[in-house]
Length: 350
Length: 111
Ligand code: SF4
Ligand code: SF4
Image (cartoon, rainbow over all chains, first blue to last red):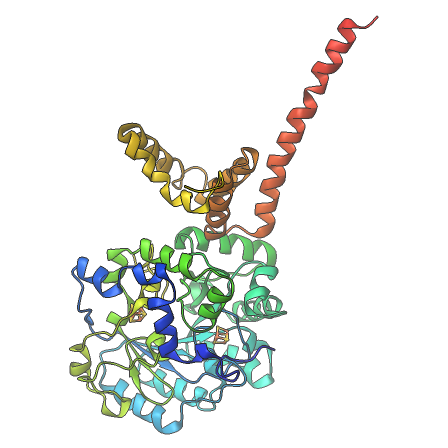
């Protein structure tokens, strides 16, 4: 299995180096407009929150997979993991928060030893809980296989990654054998009622392009995935979310190695859509890192850009009013959220 | 000036043809974008047709553009290759079917 950039001590594991590349790696990148200027033209600079609706928690960077495009640089060799004390701070914050949704991500969030305990606690608070599952984890050890029923019992919304409706493109991005395991997991989820209208158990898929191109229209991609997965495997699901790959971490590594960086950035920047910019997810989301640090989004977390200094920086200092008054930190990677129909953890934003 | 007839960068300048004649260019581009909108055929089906036609007219710009477009619209590699085979079959078939004309003429002039 490939190792994370961090373990390889790769230059790209340094966030400052990544930002430097995006801003000035080539003549073409140096000449590109800056994200802040495009926001300015759209009347959105400085970028401000609209109120916290989604409380996203990154439970750790450990993952059973090492996908080529991973913006987290996750893998089995990453040991960063949210501890019990940080979870307790999150529960305390959630008790007072307006946020309606708790969004659990990683790595593979299921691998955190406090995962089940936390889901139980959070569901007692009456919040809608989303788990971002890579699917394959649900086909590994018995304790992970049992999670399918656990999710159903707690009415957890399962949002899972499936880069394509066929084996070759899925396995190229996420590793050999991923497609078959993902199909097995989806069938198990369907079996307990996920993705079926009358059960209220929501199953959503996340599609992201397996290469240096943008995702197509969300509605037509959803229709294609529904037809193909149903025809080939009898699988049903609720929504498909199309997500644009942001040019950071391992996807940035791919762009550099394949010589696609300039053209990809050009594509993102020339597709800047002011309506998508109005709907960027950092405006209604807060991202909590595995160590309790607060960020505007999971991407800023990976770029080690915490919320601006005037806002509380750690979950133990939670103050929603002050967080709502902050200014969101941006850089050239943000063009990934505003291209075409826009992109967020909930798919297109327009 | 470029030393080759086809430069990938020129694809981005397509819209500049309006510099030498804006009215017709505008009409063409309006028509062009209307053609590719979702209709009785999906945008993905249209991208695949365009990919096949690109191979028939052997336009390198169109091949690049409609390869990306087909990928973005969610076509699989298998579908894209099948589209190219459709183009190839029609091209090959349209040559071969003229063999009938050759045979007719041969019969006409032969004893
Ligand atoms: S993309 Fe998801 S499944 Fe793949 S390595 Fe990253 S966190 Fe794990
Ligand atoms: S990358 Fe983060 S901060 Fe930038 S626009 Fe996207 S969600 Fe907002």
